[in-house]
Length: 503
Image (spheres, rainbow, N blue to C red):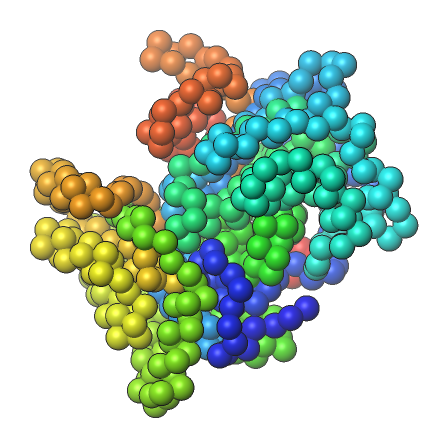
């Protein structure tokens, strides 16, 4: 597999994390499931605790959700072997799985946000190719690269869909369905909605891939639903399996993804990642104690190219190597100090805490260096100017820069009228604002897919309800994970990806 060396050009366009080659938390070792009684290689049902038992032929409608991500510290420096911190945000993707009644053998994929609505007949899919000797994989397997023969077998089923974006999404779904499932997999509708801006460097495709990975494994009975008291060892196994197959879904879309986005979307909270030696796997540390912090995310709606922004830094390094290396080293020190603050046993995330102020100051300093590296944009600087004038927090660009999004770590006890005034000014200038949370939960499941109305009555979340939810607020109000007791979302909580003890 090709590796990325500092100074090489990039062919990726999603976010800064994709400048780090092939982040793998999953080697070729097969994982075994202590909750199943079958031998390795046989996918037996794994049933988590639930208020009702469902047979595999009578699955309920259920939902899976996974977060987007931002790079908080370290973009661009990470290309040159420095550290970076990426964290989950509360903007999320939501996947509703609705079984078709028997005897239907139809598979339907609906991504209304990108205009994708397509169906396949399960029985005519290329099962023979996927079951050929050496091709079949099981839920506990890892996949390091896509098999060209299998991709070729899928091509006739993808080519009927118009547009590269829609084809990439369909390929990710159908490849995972063929690898994780089998010819007897139940017919269902897979409906995706996302509150994550697409193409803004916020990990939207990885969030979707994590949802698909978890949903297909839950549907096949090879993944245990999270429940209170699940042993840490088992929780790690479930999350590693979700992450393994989500990475495969990302490969279908991006070819050679870093793996950072799907790792954050799976485990939530945050990760510290660094790659000193490109002949060795990267250092990845899950920051389980990363606090949930209020964040203002602003989308410039300015398109940008990750490759072009990385090329700017490379050019500066060639012209002014000493100064540029000092700036990259300083970004690394900023990331390391932030990691040290968060990891300290005395760390406090309370409102007004000196630790939060220090993290905010590091965000501001990090942005200043990125400006000096030439990767900001007038729209990003205008957002920073408006935020600084309002005095509400510390701002920096996130991801490659040159457009995309900015993040602002908010100060405590802000007056509502100040935030409202800023929101109006941002809107007037064509920017899109999201009030979100940094460092939240990773992948979660709502089984069955139900909600509670104002009168306390529980009811099923239907396809029509889900598709008709209006915008970000509509989706969050209907199915959001942060709506108190209205829904019973469950999350796999404990995960230490650098610990191989669960393999």
